[in-house]
Image (tube, rainbow, N blue to C red; front, side, top):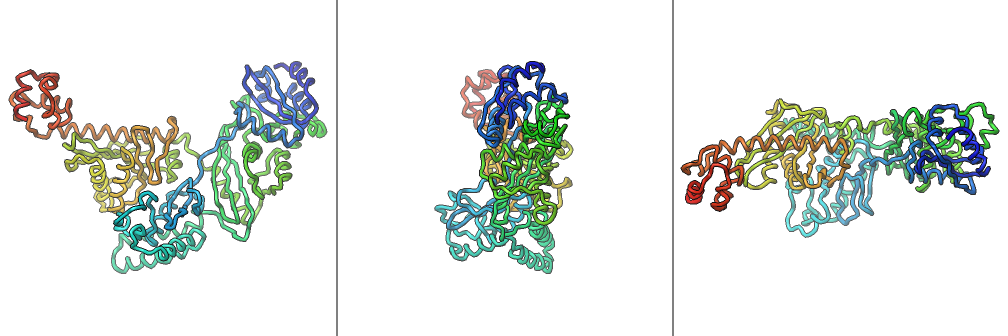
Length: 617
């Protein structure tokens, strides 16, 4: 639209509060709010910013909706942005939440690390470092022997499971411990998460000292590392400082901007304790050259870049002093956009702590009218909470780094070194395993290994043997490669369970997940995860999995060709014919079950040779 068209359209609008849309070919380009629709839209006729001019030039229509109050306009704007996702507005996209430690609502509670606690569970956290959380939970289970199995597995057992044999569960399922004693152990574990570090650190320290005195130096070193994680948990590695005397609900928000993508970290505190922590992604306006500011009106404010209008005119249009020329991707502007879009459809907290004051005073006024205290703390505990939120906001999500993205999705440190495992065999014969290595997302072929396994037609047992071989070499110092940051097994829940059993038996502490081929589900100890098909983290796991499969099949074919079979004694069947037979039927047993017609379908085998094979087998 040219300036005369904008002015003409503005003249048709009422001088009342409302929401306006710039549209092109039926699609909404931009949504804004105004105290005075006529004054606000007229300001677009003479924009002083190239960004605004580009948007106006693209538009072919302006639509509007009148509201009774400015607050209604603010909320309607937020809802339209969420629903329409206009190209030139900052748009909120929720990211995943952080893990919590939960004690289930059960007469015999289990302890688990989860992002989605069951209803009625007592949850602590969230926490930023899933690896450290898992180390602490492992220490708690080792010390207090709390169960980690599902309610389904717990019910109906007639004998303790492997966890009991390993000393990490007291087996309440079979009455090895009575309910009262188990409840005391649960209470002690919960006291740790409520801030009483000594309930776990003190027994760990005693065990470490006893192991050292008994010259069990490897065990002492393991306990030392575990103790360090426990003692750091309530310092810089767990939650922010709690203040249980505070009975308010408080949200702490901070924003970080990288290029055209912004992230807002939110910490939520109830009664002085953090109970929720999440990150949210906001996409900036379309392209940098035509982006629209998110200043004076939260996701609006673009008219105030036309400098020279006085404070009265700015007030009439709903703008704010001091926002002339603001960039759309400043943290303060992002917070303005986030506040309206987030709280328009959620319950208000008692207070909001911000890293910066939003550029839009209307947003702050709206929150305060709803009884929300808005503060930008400068010191004390509140300032520490804001610093933690800012640290979370600045944590990159790894979109340009698949390895970092994988670590973030799994809740572990960046897995720069990944080893992938697969097993290949033909009906339990010529069973082999592969161990491939990727460093920073690239195959490290010099660190590939392969292993001939026991002949058996049991994929779970084969995977357990393969992982135990790798783990024992690492624990005993017989492997010349560095320990990996992540292990990936080809398969589903059964293969993952087998791998975890092998790691537990050997004491090798490395995160492990599986990738199931059928639905490309990422199987973790906490359950399956379905990631988007275009997720870089999933693509990385697929590459590792596929390479492990290729390497295993290649080795299996080599071993299979080297194995002497009864086919070698059949006149007319040489090495090449045998290779073709096994390639077609997979095993000698399948060749035995084949008909003469099936056998003669294989190149190089006539009716006479087929009869000889049938007679010999």
